[in-house]
Image (cartoon, rainbow over all chains, first blue to last red; front, side, top):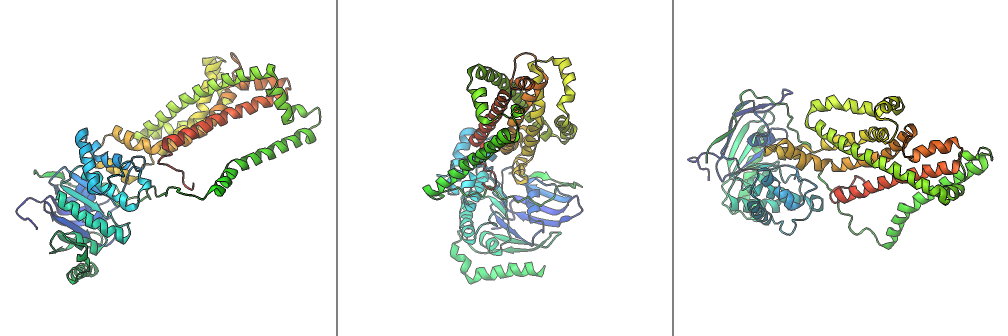
Length: 247
Length: 301
C-alpha cells in the first residue's frame, strides 16, 4: 500500500514545536503519509499528537523542520464535533464550503452527497442539540467531506463515544475512505481503533513527542467488523501496546 | 498534484497553547413528554400562582402601611390601593392626562433605547475586533454608567435645552452599559474550537463576525437588552424629573403630583411607569425566545 514512488500527500521532516511557555511539544518528529494511505498516530496523553494535526492544517506554526501538504483540499475533524449550535445539520455541513466560497449549486449537490455518505439524510433540518454524540460526529465528518479532501486529519474524533457507536463509526469511516480515497492522519488513544482503521500505525513517545515505532498493518481492505476478534488482530494490537509501554 | 509548503517555519515560536477547550456542546435533551395534565397544572400554578400570591402579600402590606401605620394627615404619601385605582385610573379627567404622559414617556424610552442599542452593540462590535479599541473604550463605558446624572443636567441643558432631547440622552446613558457589556461578552464567547473552524479556512474578519461571533453573541445580547429595557424606562422618568419643558411625561407629572400632595395620581403614575418597563421587558423576552430559543436555552432550565 505504501507507494514510495509517488510524492507523499503529507510529510513532516524533523519537526520541532516549542510553545511560548518553553514546553517542547514535538522534537524532531518525522512522518509521511502517501496518497490514499490511512495512518494512525497513538501515544500517551500530551505527546503532541494533536499538535501534529494543527501544524499540518496551518493552525499552528512550527519551530524547526518542515511540513509539506500536497493539497489545499484539507479535511479536519476535531475531538469535539464543534458544530455551530444555531445552524441546522445541513447548514453546518455547508460551513466549510461557504468559507471556501464554493459555487451554490455545486455546494448543494456535494452537501446532499456527503450527508448521504455519513447516513444523515433526513436529518438536514435538525439542530445539533437534537442529535446524539455519534450523529454530531457524522455531521462534523460531512462538513469536511463536502470539500472532497485529499488529506483528512482526524483528532480523536470518536474518543467521547461509547464503544458500540465508535465501532460502527469506524466501519463507516473505512467505507467512506474507500469511497473517497483520501490520505488520512488519524490521532487516537485506542490501539484497537488504530489497528482496525489503518494501513500503518505510528507510535509516539511522551512529550516531547517523537516517532518511536512505525508498524505496517497487513490486513486487506475492505475490513469486516469480525476482524477485531481474530488472533492476528490481537497480536498486532499487542505489538503496538508493547511499544507504548516501552516508552 | 503540486507540493505546497504550508509552513517551512524557521524560528516561528507561537504563543498559542495546544490544549483545546473542550466545552460540552449543547448536550441538552429535548424536554420530551414531561408528565401529564397534573404536572402541567402544577407548573402553571408555580409559573403564575406564586407571583400572584406575592402580589397579594405586597397589596396587603400596602394596606397595612396606608391604613394602619399612616394617620389621615400622612396618608397622601401612600394612599390605599383602591383609592389609587379610583382616583388615578378610573377618573376620566385624570386618566386622559395619565395616558398622554405615558405616550410621551414611551416615546422617550423607545427613542433612547433604540439609540442605546445601536451605539451599544456597535461599540461592542468595535471592541471585539481589536483589543486596543476595547482597552480604549471600555473604561469610559464604565465611567458613563457610574456618572451621576444629576451632575450632567446643567451641561446637558446648556447644549440641548430642557425638552425632549436631553431626556433621550439621559435614557441612552442609563441604558447603554448593560448592552455594551453583555454584547461584548457574547461576541467573545465563541469557543476556541469554533474559531479554529474559521481560521482553518482563512475566513476574514467580517465573515467571522457575521457567521460566528454575532450569532454566538445573540443570547447575551438579548440578556443585555432585557436588562436595559427596564433601565430605559427609568432613564426616561429620571430625564423627565430634570428636564420639564415641553410635553409632560410620567416623570414630569410625578414632580407635580408630589408638590401638590396628590398621592393617588402620583402612585398611578408610578404603577403606569412600571407597567411600561414590564411591557418592554416581556417583549424582549418574547423576541429573544423567538430568535434564539430554537437553539439556546439558559442553563438549568
